[in-house]
Length: 254
Image 1 (cartoon, rainbow, N blue to C red):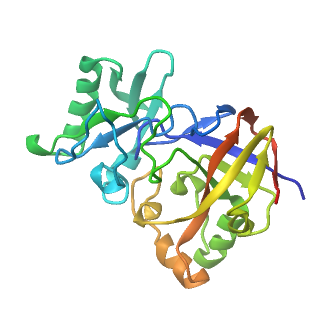
Image 2 (spheres, helix red, strand yellow; image 1 turned 90 degrees about the vertical axis):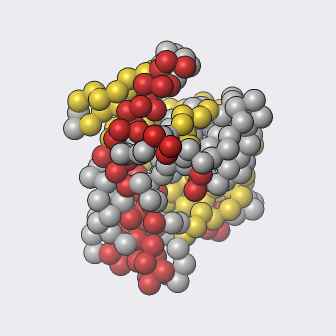
C-alpha cells in the first residue's frame, strides 16, 4: 500500500486550535510557515523579544494544564496578521498581532477567559521568522501515523481524534508504528525530503478532547498499558524545499 499525506495542520498560537491546510510550502531547516509562531507566556516567564530563546512548554499556557483552551477555535490570517478567536462558532476576540493594540486585545481576552489574576495575565510573545515555539528546540515538523492511532484505539475501544496529538502531518497507508523505524532516515514527502530525528514522547495534553476541553480519555496510560511506552509520532527536519499537498506520496529511504 502506498503511504500518503492524509492531513496537514499548523498551530499559529502554541496551545490553541489547529488549522487544516490543503498544501504547505516547506523550506529547508524550517517548520511550517506560521506554525507555533506565537505563544501565550505565563507572567513569570522571562522572554526577551530582542533576543528570543527557546523555552520549555511549562513556561506557556498550554493544554497539559489549561484544558479550557481547547474550547476555543482560532483563525490566523497570514496577510493581515489578524487572529480571530471563536467560541461555539461566535467571534469573541479579534486582534492584529503585528500591533501592540491588537496583541493587548488578545491578551485581555485570554486573561478574562482563563480567569487569570492581573499578576498572572498571559503575555502574547512571538518568534522571528525561522523560529518556533515547538516543544523541540529546533524547527521541526511532527508526523503522526494514522495506523498507530488505530492500533491505540484497539486498546481504548474508542475513536481517537488525531488532533489530540497536534501533529503537522497525518500519514495514512503505513503499518502501525512503522514511523518509529524512520528515526535516522530520510523520508520523501511529495517533492520534499525530511530527516527524521526523534520519536515524540507524550504528556497529559493528549488526554484533552480538542473540541470540548474535557479530559475524557487517559491516552498516556493507554499507551503505557498497551505498548509499554508513551510515544506517538516522530519529529523531522526539512532537508530540501518543496510544496507538499494532501495526497502526496510518503516514502522512507535509507
